[in-house]
Image (cartoon, rainbow, N blue to C red; front, top):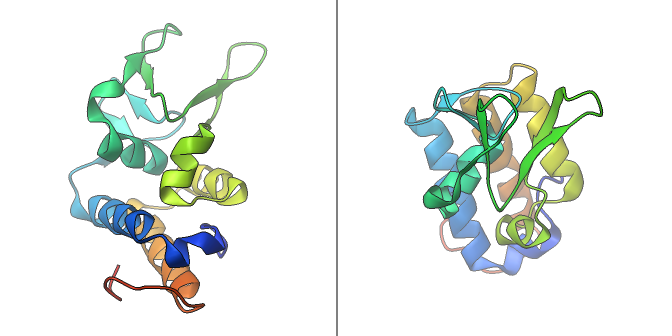
Length: 145
């Protein structure tokens, strides 16, 4: 999978640092993977929820729907018209810019997370796309994600 990140990540050293920290967190085993929400009260996270938690861990807000999940200022869980839980994404454009996430990459990561890809597999995808973007030029603070 390519194009998770915008081409501007090649010159955005702060975004590169954030992505590397996110990759390390996904590989660390600290976060328990869950589906259908950025963060659930069972203390599970979507891969995108991990990114939200790394930036602002204090910002989670209990969502009223059954009280089973949290929303975050960076993103949220989208509900269908009949109340079913759908996608969880980083839907705040400013937050997506912090990680230089493309819109397509954002939704693809949510889909991968919710269809069985492990955090380690998702971390490898992030690392591969970051490497590809850095190969196009720009400052590199460390070639290892």
